[in-house]
Image 1 (spheres, rainbow, N blue to C red):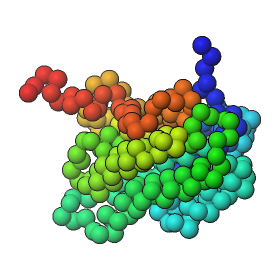
Image 2 (image 1 turned 180 degrees about the vertical axis):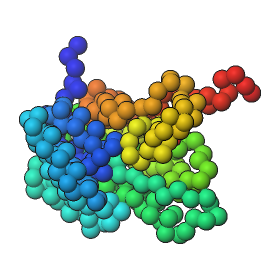
Image 3 (image 1 turned 180 degrees about the horizontal axis):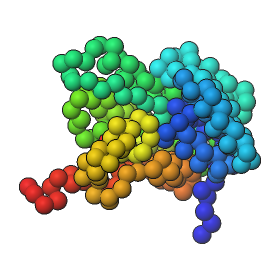
Length: 268
Ligand code: BGC
């Protein structure tokens, strides 16, 4: 059977792709033939470097600055995408931040910042994308009208003390994704989440930066290694492609078993 793990003629917008998971996802989708908008908030040099790597490999990409929590920014990012590539097919809502704090010391600002980027940002990008999909119509490049990929976290199901703003935002992403998937399936728009566990990126350097921290982290990962950005990027490519055409409303845990309650393996 011939694989359809190809995205030629399609365009992806990967939010927060100047580093970390977003960067790996942008490179992976580009290597499958997609045009890519490399969105960044503060890392413009890093975003340009990602664009350059895509171009060096024969792909097409542009860097676009936007704060995904700001409606006007999101609208101009999608407009720039259309101006450069003509269409939007695969929004990957990846931007995410942590502002960790003991609950009783958490400021309203620390709460709002995380909810705004991690949850409201996904709402704004998905809404913009859906309006564009409906306007574009079927274009003969995919079986679906559009594919929305929400980057969530294992903390959409694993409670996380000291990070209630983050866990609440990701729990929200889960129901945003499922409700959207239910609403949009009749329109042939697929919506899915990827929920990564511990992946070696700048956001969680504290958890793997020393041998001691890494060994402690590995106790939570039955598969015995920390994840790499490519582990997540490969799943994003599959979800963006027609290989997953019957998949919508699903959460894909890419976590080496972190959500399997490893503490119960010889206890309970
Ligand atoms: C967080 C990381 C954390 C991982 C597993 C991710 O969503 O951003 O900081 O290491 O979940 O706990």
